[in-house]
Every structure is written in structure tokens, then in C-alpha cells.
Length: 434
Image (cartoon, helix red, strand yellow):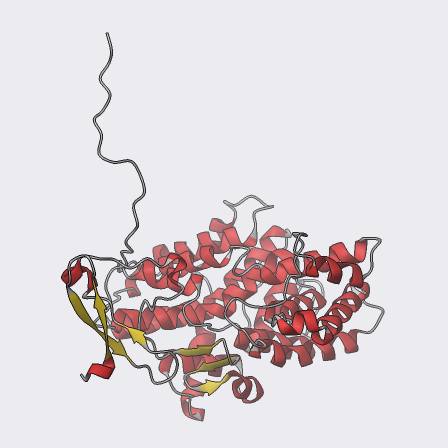
């Protein structure tokens, strides 16, 4: 390793110095390897939220926030959205390559044949209150899968890991749909093997025993696109949670359940739900959209436009560019007779102003994927409390891909972050006074 591949850190208090290796990725920002820092100098690093820390190396997803790029396995998200369906993307994330026709046919059959849930899980649902949040049900049911499929979770066996991955991808739509139906007092609908992944989910969600149900092709296409765009997003909070949980060699169902719990947070997976609540408040108020635009510009006003800007993307969210067209097509097809037409009108007015206003442009406050996905899901008849559930269905493949990659990584260690202690100094326990 040459000098240019290291950085030198000098401790002025002791005169000691250390050369730290610079690790170069195939794409993206180089990383300083600080693993020797404590052993040689006796220091830790301090990085709240791990915003400047690479916790692992990964070959699954590449994200460039400055230039607004997202790639799965090297393929731009724009091309995958145009040419692939969700199950093809699942194969890519799991295997690192797009499937051949033969490989895809086999993979699709495997997923289709794993969509059924153990019949005893029906009784598990009845243990929840009828008004339980579907995400709470998801956390519990997915965590319970290890009690029903415990024979196939030897995490050190590659075949067993892949079986678990297939089971999770296949069963998550069924678990999600049953969460919805339980909260609405509807009988559980079993999966249908003749339907594709998105159509099957919509059928399990909305079909009734008394009425024949055929999923709307427009909704199917839109949902499949939402699944693709949400399949993975590098080392986000929920994916990091899955990796951290899995680093203890916990079974994959427990690790994914932990990821669902992390996703449930409004700062992570609940953003598209927040968009709809904001739009509803705007429509039900006596003020127009311009009023809220001005509030958003006022630094002394705590009001924020939900669904605009992104913590990572300092450019236009590439997923938003893709889904925007689908959103507009869907709303145009629904017309003004839809019960949410006033809300959709407000959303489009808000979008137009934000895309043209210099205040938002200069601050890169473009509509993000949550802005459009929330509108699409509402137009499809999905209730607000199911928005994050659908996110979890899509993200499952990303979670299990990262979990599998971590298990195979010889450098992987059980997660054990350090801390900067600022508490009391050592002190004696107070003695009782006479």
C-alpha cells in the first residue's frame, strides 16, 4: 500500500502517529479504515447517527445523493423500472445478476409456492385487538414465523438462508393483506397462484367472498413500480437494524421483524402517510396552497412541507422522477369524480409551485418518492395505516439480501457501537446516617 493510500493521524499530546488505510470502492466515496485507531492510539471515533461511518462493505445497492443516482447491482433504477418487474428485481438483489428466462421461471414458481401461511397463524391474528395498527401486527407475525418454520433456519447453511429469503418474500404480502383484513373484520383471503405478485396482493387485500374481484391493471402496474422503487436503499435505518440484529446470529425472521419495527418510525417509513395528512389539513382548511408555501418559507414557522427534499438526495430523488409520471397518469384516469379529487388537486398545485419556486429549487426541496407514493396508494383505496406496511412488503427483499450478505462476510462482527460517556465519575454508595 502506497503513502497515497493512507492518511496519517498525529496525536499532539503524545507525539504518536498512525497511518490509516484508505479503502477505495468500485463506485463512490473512499473510506478511511479506523479499526486500528483504538488499539494503537487508544481512541474511538464519535459519529452520532453513523452519518460519516461505513458499517460494512456491500455489493447490493449504490446510492449517490449528490447526483441523484440509485442502482441495484449496478443497474440504474430508471432502467429497472422501465424493463423489469418486481420479482426480477428481487432475483437481482438476492443473486447479484438479472435472471435468465429459465432462472426467472424457476424463481417465480418458488415464490408462488411459498405464499401460503401456516394455518395456525390465523389464530395468532385473533390475539390482537381489532384496532391494532397493522404495523404492530406485522412485527408480531413476522417475528413468530421462526416458531412455525424453525426447521429451515440454520443461518450457516447457504441453502437454508435462501429458503428463508424465499419464504419471507413470498409470505410478506399474505401477512400484510391479512393484517388489513383482520382490522376490517373481513375473512382472510388465501393467495392465488395464477396471479402475479402485485395482483395477488391486491386480491388478498380487496376481494370479497360475495363479489368477483379482478385487480385493475393500472393499479397492478403502479403497485409493482412502488415495490421496485422501495426494494432497497442501501444502509438506511431499517436495513442497518436488520444487519445489527442479524449480527448476533439471530434467526432471519427475528431480524426482519426488527427491521419492520424500525421502518414503522414516522421519520423513516411513515413519510408518505405524513404527506396525505398534510394534504388533508390543507384541503380542510380555509387557506389556499400558497398560504402553506409561504409558511414553509418562514424560518420562524415550524410548519414543514412533507414529501419534499431528502436526507440523502441533494438533487432530485431519482425514484420521484420515475413515479411522478405514473402518479399523474393515475390521477388523470380517475378524473374529478374521485372522492379524493380535491386532495389530488392540492397535491398537484403544491408540486407545480415547488418545482418552479426559486426558494425550493435553490434548497433542493423537490418532491420525493414519498410524496407521489402516498397519493398513488390513496387513489388505489389503501388506507393510511397500510402505507408503511406496503413499504415493508417491498423492502423485505432488500433486508434479506443484506442479511445474507452480512452472514457470508468474513469481516462481519457482532455489532457493538462505542459511546462517549458523560455521566457521573466513580462514587461511593451513600451510607445511612444515624
